[in-house]
Image (cartoon, rainbow, N blue to C red):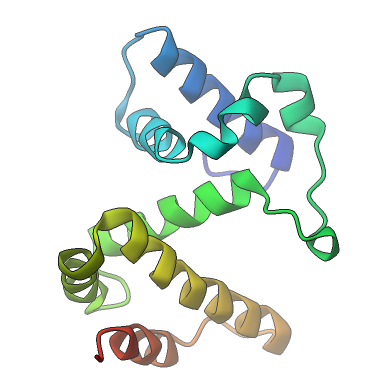
Length: 142
């Protein structure tokens, strides 16, 4: 699935979802993708028309959420937790899900992930893991 090609990534998501709905056997990554899709019923209609789903544009200035980007952020965050990179994110994640459940915790953490990625892109640097972790730790404060 590792690709920078938008259409290939979207096709992969669609294939995972179609396989899940058909009751086919999924590999670990396909299962992860289909679970994220299942948690987002608001995107299921988009996925029913593969041709449209692949071609659809989601301009940020139009206020539309790109469902593929959103779901990819869930998967990216989950990968950070599994690998505990940056170091300490797994513990923060566990504390966050104890407070608000998995999906809500991921959404809160994803806001900071987006900000970290945006800052890195703007500054043409690697993401600053220290600032990212500090922001995540601030989410734990009452």
